[in-house]
Image (cartoon, rainbow, N blue to C red; front, top):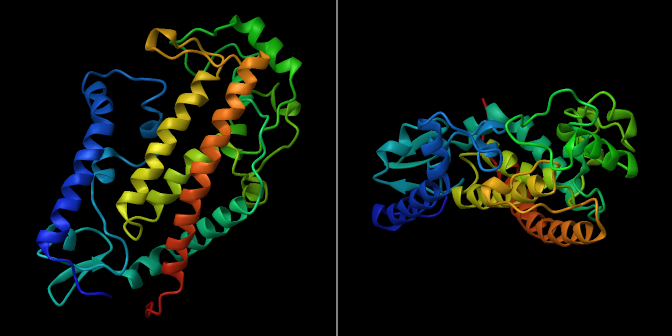
Length: 290
C-alpha cells in the first residue's frame, strides 16, 4: 500500500462525493418522505438495492489508507493498520471472491462483443403485451392497449437481457428471438443493451468498498441517464412529467433511439473497462485468506 492519505487530503474528496450524491438523490429522498414515487427517477432505488445512505459513503478503493478516519474504520470490510483505515482486502476476498470473479467474467465477455443495436426498447412494450394490468399503472399507455399490442406484433423483439426478459408477459415471451436464462447471462449480454449499461451501477456497488466511490457514482449517473431513454421509448405517456416520447414505432423515433443507444454504449464500455481493472487489481492481490 502507498503512504496513507492525510485527513487534509481525503476529507475534501469525501465531502465533494457526499454533495454530489445529495444533489443526485435530493428529489428521491423528498418524494420518499411524502410517500410519492416517480417512474423514471426512483427506478434506481426500487429495482436496485443500494440505498442513498450507502451511495453517500465515500470509499477510496483498495490499497489506500486514510489517516484520522475513525468512521471508516468502523465500517464493514475495513481494518486499521498503523493508525490508518483501509479496506480489508483479505476479508473482502474471503466473503466476495466468487462475486468478483463472476462480475469480471460478465464484464469482460460483454466488453468483447460489438454492440447490437436495433432492439428499439421493445422490452418495455413486451412487458405489457396483451396484459390486463400494466407495471406502471398510474401512467396511461400512449397508444392504448390495442395500439401497444400492434407495435409489438409489427416488430421483431430482440431482447438478450434476462432481467428484462423475465418481466415479459406470457404472450410476449415466444415472440422474443432468444429465450435468455440466468445461466446464459455471460454468454448473451452485449454492450448495446440499455439494461446492461444500467447494470454497471449494480456491479459497481457490489464491489464496494473495494471500488472507488467516484466510479460507483459515474455508473449511477449513466444508469440514471439510460433510464430516461428507457422510459421515453416505452409505451407509457409521461408527458405530464416533462418527458417527450421517443416514438420507436416510427422511422424517426427508431433513428433517435439508435443514436442515443450508441452514445450510452460508448459510455458504458469506458466504465466497464474501469470496473474490469478494479476486479483485476482485487483478484491479483497477494493477500492471505483464512
